[in-house]
Amino acid sequence: MAQVGIKRTKLKSDFEPSMKNISRIMKVITENGSKCKTQLSLDANLNYARLVRHIVWLEKKGLVESKVEDSKVNVALTGKGEIFASIFSED
Image 1 (tube, rainbow, N blue to C red):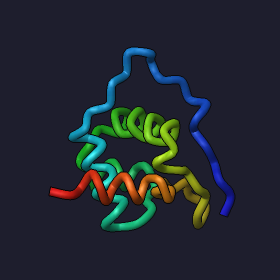
Image 2 (cartoon, helix red, strand yellow):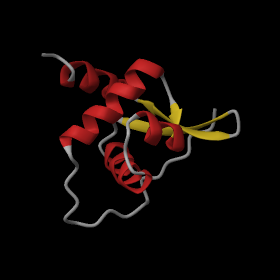
Image 3 (tube, one colour):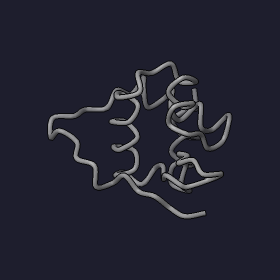
Image 4 (cartoon, helix red, strand yellow):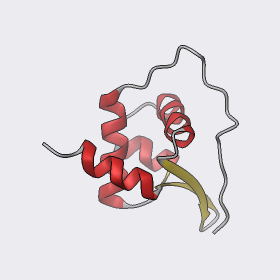
């Protein structure tokens, strides 16, 4: 699997991720494994553009990575992301 980063994508300097959106994204990936951004957007019930901004932020933090799988770019948790997701989802 080739790794395809979107880390070079620029975020506005004032971008502040929504913890609610981060939670949705992490939950969907944790429960269903890697997903393409379109399916992830649908499953997390997020606008595609908003999802992409959050994915870029998560990639820059090293919590997710984009990989080519079956001719699609899928987003998956990194080891660091798995730890974060498990802590983040604790009650």
